[in-house]
Length: 406
Image 1 (cartoon, one colour):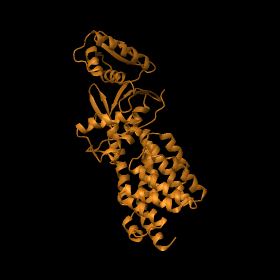
Image 2 (image 1 turned 135 degrees about the horizontal axis):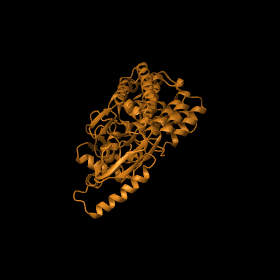
Image 3 (image 1 turned 60 degrees about the vertical axis):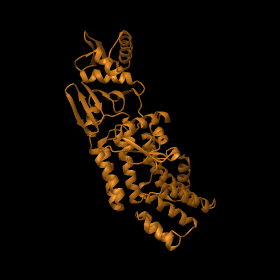
């Protein structure tokens, strides 16, 4: 490696892309193309960065597998930053294996961190944790160690584990300070703010109370029967029943839980669950059917008793009842939660992260655009979406999470 290449690499590792470009901007050899690509990525020109990295990989050729693998890792990092989740990450796994075989522990560990970060984005938390545990963090430079800490904190926050999340963020903050990169320090501080922000509202017939993540964790650890509209579920202790595809049952459960220990009139249940302003016999028949379905689903936790007024929720044993909602209730909160990270997302990436159809995401984005909550730029395949302004919008309980049902 010549002196200019080495100096450019040091500049990039310290977060100074302009100093790197001064040394290699006029060169077209493979190492210079790769360094220029990374520099352009740090400056935000992601399309040009991808082009340069592809050119570099071709220039290295098949006889330099380690250099080509490093280009693949750099391109995967750009794909993550640009939320290009449709891009295949199989190449990243192969690149990681190549780097490990060639003895490049630093870049192999960095590739593992990127895999864990991608899995975190789409809610595969257990897989992300497994990869993170397999990474040789001692081989990573401070900037990548900070990134690993942020991923670990993200996993813990979505699992509602405040202690591990706090510890991971403290480790990330120390690594970011060691790296001395202002943008990374700001990213860690943003994550700390998210951890300290209200995570949910505890709603009852007497009003509501804002809870931070540790408050939500304490509530879940209690013996309470919880109707959780952040996760669209009913839960008690370790058992959880997902109602993602049963919005009527979730609305009925929420209405009954908010009124507990009192009962709820049939008219109120029809209005909340079906939007019926003037109920007729067909509405009442449907209500009886849905109440029967709700009884069956929540039987392990509670009963739904008929009263002279309507229906009442009767939890099993001495459980008390709680309702968790997002601090800021909105249409399509899961889309806003993803966009709240400040990055520009494509609709296809949002669909992958939320595990829904592209058309479902498009309808949500149309509604949010009309409400002035999101905006787009670019056209066609280059169209990207960002949140217009969602101050303090918490994300940890609304982001994708694969939950084992019970």
